[in-house]
Image (cartoon, rainbow, N blue to C red; front, side, top):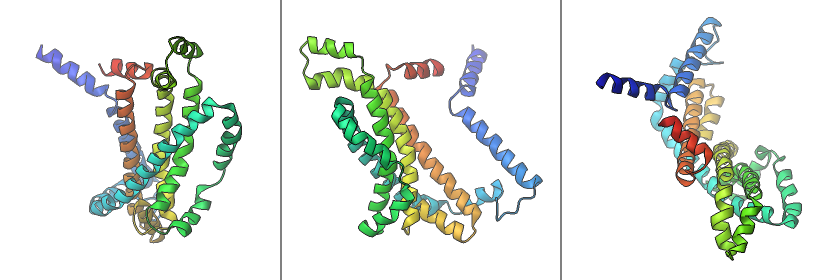
Length: 269
């Protein structure tokens, strides 16, 4: 029994969702190191993984402190994206008139490079956290709107008719029919939005800031400190991964009935 239990535990570990990406990451790191050594790439072009790891260890406190304002700007922009994106998507999905007037303008706004207009936010709001939050909001807003509109439009009309036939109010219909059916699409948009919000916060820090991961990246590039730059990119990637994972956990708790979540439960069982 102990041997079978140990074999079952080993099998669950090998099939876990975190181990396979970790193995792939290790393989990429080994390939990176071998490529740098074989091709004799100079450190000022591409640093070796060892140098990046040393920079990450030596400057961990500095990078961790820089990650705080970047994370706060990301969360602020993401919160604004949710607060404005979901109500607007409800209006677009519920009214063809609103969709005809508003939706094309939203699509048009996405063709404007955020790097080009980010300096305006610095001029208008100064060098504080507000320009970074707005930049994160502009990048994270559109995916939520598109996904939520698709989710609300995909609600089965027969279910809506059934709710009306049972004399359910608009609020009850929204709470029991529209929102549950739209939640999978909404969470898909939230996952995209949170990663883009990280990018938006860094864009704001590039334009004008004296703190944050974007400031560290800009300073490192200017001083040709590539190991520090790569270490900052790793910290930035970790921020995105952690925030994405938090949204994923919330999704599992909010819609355990959805087919994708049932698949995850079966896979981890």
